[in-house]
Amino acid sequence: MKKITENTILVTGIAGFIGFHVARKLLEEGHKVIGIDCVNDYYDVTLKEARLKLLHDNHGDLLTFYKINIENKEDVEKVWKSANPKITHVVHLAAQAGVRYSLVNPYSYISSNVMGHLVLLEMARHQKDFEHFVYASSSSVYGSNEKMPFSESDPVNQPMALYAATKRCDELMSYSYSHLYGLPTTGLRFFTAYGPWGRPDQALFIFTKKILAGDPIPVFNYGKMKRDFTYIDDIRDGVLAALRHIPKKTEKSLPQEVYNLGNSGVSTLTSYIQLIEENLGKKAILDLQPMQPGDIPAAASDITKARKNLGFDPKINTETGVKNFIEWYKDYYKVD
Image (tube, rainbow, N blue to C red; front, side, top):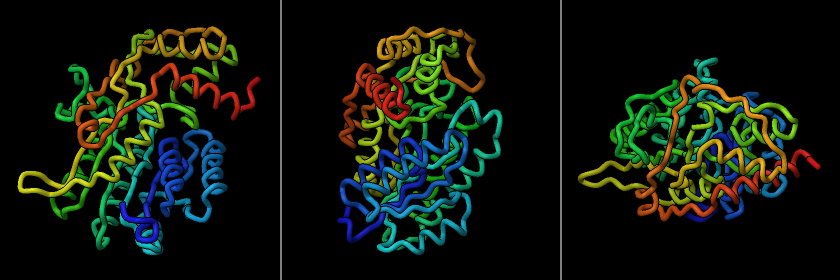
């Protein structure tokens, strides 16, 4: 990427889990960052505010933050036009997250994940000398596919939940903008990101909290769920590698790409829980439950393409990753 004096990077969802880690690294590298987040109450707002405070305290000279909704075209346009230097790169991570919540509040997924994505694409395609639009997709787009591991060349036409459908919609819209306007776009299919400063609605956070409290933990699919748990530092490094690798238009291809970002290894939910127990020194009370609507029983990533093109090389195994999270959790929540 160009030097800090020549561009501004827009990071949406900057108060979120992945957005916070990506923005912190960009700021540490000396880039000027504009952050957008609506800081909604889908999960603990104080955690989002703590992330933002950490960014401001350490890099306030390089960071400008706006509390707005990405689906609000007028607000986003004001932010975009006020940028100095101009915005040349976007890392679009804002979205209404959660597979199960999409069964409860589907409208929020369409407004944020679809309309919000369109607003940002429109801003980028009208920006002179715009360089790269990187956005978050999800492993959930693979839906009911049974072939493992999931590859970018696999069909993704059977989403199991509305959340997955909106992420696939984002991929299709991005493809069309690359086709119509030559806009360089890169979609990243994240596989179960976890780690310090994680989301309270995810398994690791829920299990840790409930085990410490002595409460039963809900274990879906009777513990047989399999996931490609990917540590946040590896996810962050993959996002930054993708941002720097701008797809080019050729006679045979559009300036667009989609990549899996996973750990390239699968853990069962049962083994994941055992790691949490070991690090807490306390046994879990298991509440075994059937598969939940919208969930998929297994997800494993083929990261061959990301390795080859981006140099993506995940380094943190689940043993180390869970340990790091537990240490952060105890420190943040002052657990003795």
